[in-house]
Image 1 (cartoon, rainbow, N blue to C red):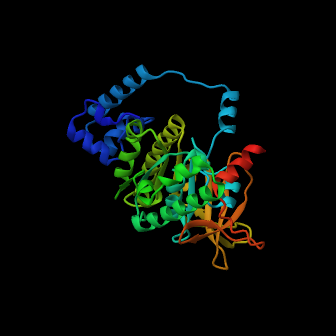
Image 2 (image 1 turned 135 degrees about the horizontal axis):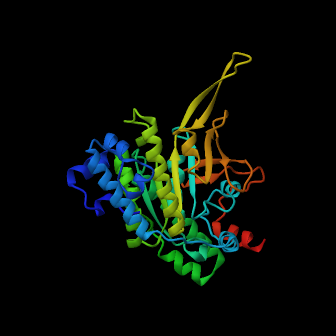
Image 3 (image 1 turned 90 degrees about the horizontal axis):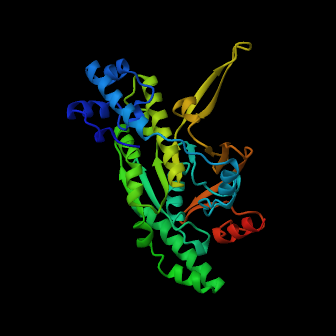
Length: 360
């Protein structure tokens, strides 16, 4: 999606547009000159010129692109997701974190949202001989949760595990691939940016298309978290909703066009419900940013604390899977399953599960 900086807009007006949340041409969809003038504090005639210029260029570039339902079905049936070390979480989603879609992890502080994002940033890099995608990751960090020492820990654990698998399997291809998998190798394929406000997040999202052209191996984009910058500095919730919806549309287009996974983290907020009959009030935990934002994500997973202190991942929203839950733990090696009663530790490598899935 083209940035407004690509248009002939006076620098002072461009600055005011960006500060008001209008960064890309797509952000002006459905906005009339009066609203644009008021929100960006620019003259109404200039607002009209800007909207006309953007819409004229869009109409010249617009064309109909379609696929048959059969083509979509065949593509998704053969699609490989990002399969992690938590077999049970992968199973409730379907086949790992899917490409071409937005997956949102919602949870309270400390439950493991960032840990899962860092784990996926390592997992997406696994070579095909280990059932992986050999991809790279782009990580937008808004809360400072991306800790290099922790990512290195997860990378070292992945390195050791893949080398153990290669040694046991005695397959030359796996041994050759494992020999180059060092922590430095994993870290060199994660592109990290720190954002301090929502305007910076929007700028990076709207420039994703250009960045992905320069880095075509990226198969995972993380925004951790999407809630933090958008729950501040907004007195007008209608404006926030409009900006969020525009960003969601851009992310969906990026995920579809480049066939990559978008993973977002979100906070939980308490929602109070008043029963008009009994006059009683109940409360429940709901994902933040409102109901409108909930439509942006294809898959939504709630990460919750159990009463016993354990962690529980619940599939909250999915287009093709029923609601289900899986227990997990955060270890020094990363995100892992809770050991079963039979002694199985759930630390089975994705390659084995991939072969089992493909054989069905």
